[in-house]
Every structure is written in C-alpha cells, then in structure tokens.
Image (cartoon, rainbow, N blue to C red; front, side, top):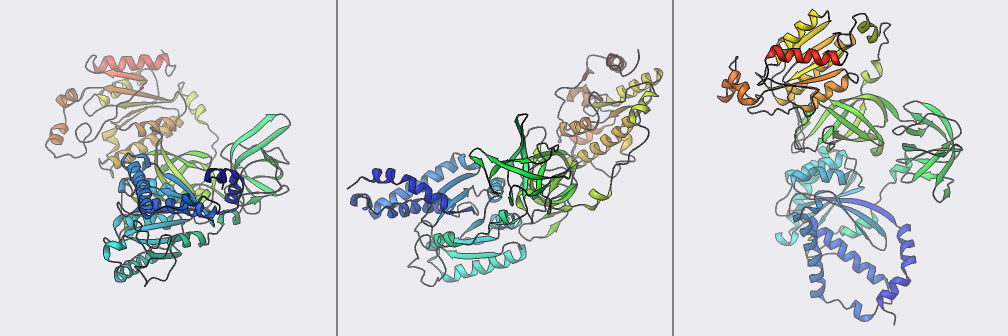
Length: 635
C-alpha cells in the first residue's frame, strides 16, 4: 500500500484544481476577550485537517488510527499556539488563516478581542462576507459585543453567526441560550444592516455543534457551525455592480503600447465596452484586456488587468475607469461615518491624508455632527473623537475624487485616514453622500491675480509665522519686525494671537480641539492676505506641528517662513508678565501650553531666535536680514 505522503504528492494537482473550483467565504471572528475565538479557530483548523485526510480513501490504516487522547493533545497544542501568538503580540495586526473542506474554502480574519485592538477587528471585517460574533454564555452581551456588532453592521456584513460559546459551563442550558439570542436579536434590530442572524449554542473546547451535532443539546435543531459556513449563501455582490477600476499605474513600455493597470473593484468589462474616466469625465471604448497570460474576452471583479482604449485619453494614477452608462459620482465634500483608530484624538480642522482606492488627497474633518454610543446607539454631542469612538462627520478634500456611497459599493465608498506627520493610519470611514455644497459652490475666477497685487506693492507675499511658548517674546519681536518693514515701505499685516481671540476666534476655548481650530482659521486668513500681496506676520503659540504644517501647505513654495522663538520654559515662566503661568500652576487655567498641554517645537524652522542670547531688537534685525537675503524685501 502506498504511503500517505506519496498519495498526497500524487494527488496534489487534482487537489489544487479542486481548491480553485470551490467557492470562497471570508469571515471574521468577533467578540470580547476570552470569549473563545482562539479555541474556535483552532477547532475549525484542526477539524478541517481531519476532514481533508478522510477524503484520501487510500491512507494507510495506521495513519487513520488517531486515538481520542491524541486528538485532544494535538488540538490543545494548536489552540495553545494561537494563544501564544496573541501573548507575543503577533496578532495585533490582522492574521488571516486559510482552511478548506470538501465543499468550500475559507479565509478567517483572526484579531484580538481587546478594546484597544478594535481597529484591527474593523480592518479584518472590511473584507468579510460573514461575521461570527462570539458570546461567553456565562457573561452574555458585553460592550465589546455591541461595539463589534455595530462595526459589522456599518461595514455592510449582512450575515452574522451568533455563537453562544462555553455552553458546557452553564450546563448546556436552553434558557441561557434563548435569553442571549432574544437580547441580541433585539439589539441587532435597532442597529439595522444585519439581514441574517443564525444563533448556534456551542462549546468550542468540547466540539459541541462545531463540526458535529451536540448530544448534550438535543433541544437545538439548527445547523452546526461548519455546516452553516459551508452552505450559507453569499451574494457575489462585487460582480453584480457597475464596473469600477481605480488606476494603479499607466503602463507604457514602448511607443506602441499604452495601457492602464488596476484591480477591478466591481463589475465586469469586455472589449468594446464604453467607459468613462473620472474625475475628467472623458469617454472611450475598451480595446483590449491584457494580462500576463494573454488577452481576455472578459474580466471580472477581483482580477488585476491592464486595459487599452480606442482613444488617447490623459489618465493618471488615482483616476477611476467606470462603466460609461453607470459612472461613479465625483465630489470633494461628504458626510461620512468615521471609526477613530489612533491613541491621539481626532481634532476637527487638523489636516489628514485620505486614501481611497488608488487616490490619496488632503482632507480636513469638521467637528463631529454626533458621536454614536455603541451601547445605547444614542447620538451624543462631541467636539472630537477618541480611540475606538465612532462619529458622523463632514469631510472636505482639496480636490474632487470619484466615489460611490458605501452602502452601494464597499470598495469605492470606503477610505482610511493617515496622519501626515507619522504616516500611520488613524481612522477608517464610509462615505454616505456628497454634500450639496460640493456641487453648488464653485471657485470664482478673478480678473486681478495675486501676482498683480504683489507686483504693484513691489514685494513678494509671504507668511512670517512666529511660534513659541507663552512669554517667549513672539509678539514683541513680531511687532518690532512689523515696524521695521513699514519703515522699508513694505505692505504688511500683523495677526496676534490675543487680538484675534477678541473677534474672529472669540468663540474658541483652549482645549486641544479648540487650539487646532484656532490655528486653522488664522491660517486661512493668512493665506487670503498673501493673495492680497501682503507680508503677513502671524504671532501664535501654535503648539502643534500638524497645524503649522497646514498653514505652510496653504501657501506656495517659499511663501511660508517659520520663526521659532526658542525660549526655555523656565525663562518664559520667569517673565510671566500676564501672570498666566502662575495661574496655570495653581490649577486656575487648564490646558496651558508647557504646563498641562504639550508644545511641539519646530524641527526645521527657517529662522530660529534664541531670546536668551539676543535682545528683541537684535532678533528683529536678524529677521529683516533673512527676508532681504530671500528677496522678500529690498535692502
């Protein structure tokens, strides 16, 4: 008789072919800590291995003789291995595990249940067709259960398995199971979005209702877990939708070939199909569908291809090729739902990068319309979003992008937010719809350009941004610089932090969120003043690098000069002419920069002034000298 390894080797081609022909189900396991996710995944992986071995009918007899104790030992080692990965932090990022049975192949997203890793659960759920929500039968529905269910519902996962685990620890009580199922279905009904719930009582450790029906729960008549996973109907929604292909790169190896490569996110495409390229709205017809294995007669969602077109159209990375008869929308302002995934809160007005498909654009988030309480589903007022909080916010981009509402197309309606300073992902979101102002408000062309306004003043417009601690001498130095510029016949405007808070920003306090908005408004005003051709001096503490970066990005290259008035905290506090530090130390002023709110010093300021070494007058002279060297003002 052939050895098992020889049988597997001889049948490998047939096995791989069979795997290709099986349907694929992507699912995620969700729930709170210690609900049994590792045990359940371990059980599925272990049992699916046995199922595959049973399919090889010619196995040696001794290879099939796996004693009960051996089964339990191997299973325990597998579960211990999964748990060990968690303890070592290996699964802090999403771990995707593959297994297969006779009827279907599966990819399961394995993420920790800890609250701080909710971001990882959301990442795994974003591509899932089904979610297994685990509940410890002893504990019932917990906050993390509700949070994960909320995310599942908002991400468009319509199929949920309510896995009431550890039934062996409640003596397989039908009443316990029934109470949990009734409570969860009531919560899911309030959530909306979850179309199909299959509740299964189980014990992942003992194997009850995982692969085989439990003898201890004869009162349960529904499917066991694997049976349900193998037979649940999953709509091939992506292929049924209109054609969308975000362009990843323009492929032009020679003058005779120009193709546009990308991953088809939805729909199908054939040679001869009419297409529209967004956001330009130029139209053409598909000439060829090119792959490494030759041309295709048709390409479908999930394939990476290169399209050639009948017409020469200007297309770049980030554009989207759509079905001409059913194109995506184009806008630069949206209402969205955002799940915040960073330890540092989301501050309205702070600039982020938004990435959707192959497009990356600058984005600014407004103050949340409301924050959603995942326990009560109430809409609560909020100034910002903290880690794992969900809120509905408007978002504004620096240019229009093609999109579909998330409920219509998960691939083209979802996005992530990236911190511009650290390049780390800080949030994920779903587009609801474009705001009317996105299409109703247009840029008005003006006859007099900013260059004309500057030329008649005989100067180059620039923003001189003075930053430093309270008491560092910013306002004093800026005031002297302003006076010296006027003496040189320069046209200037000085925006001082205290003065602006008496008018434009009098509605803002001193929380981190309000400080961000304070600087955002002033940066926009400074930009308008450079449009007028002015040399604009801005004297604000502006404690955060991100907002100073926002102000820099608003104006042209060479039109932003950061002046770091570098004064040690102890020196600034010793001056304390306004008595602010004394009040802050006494607890009378909250969120005071340098005391209980951070100051992020510039890393590469164009001008650095050390006030412990030179006087304010000398500092102003040095700034004028630097402006002269840069050609901002005449000597």
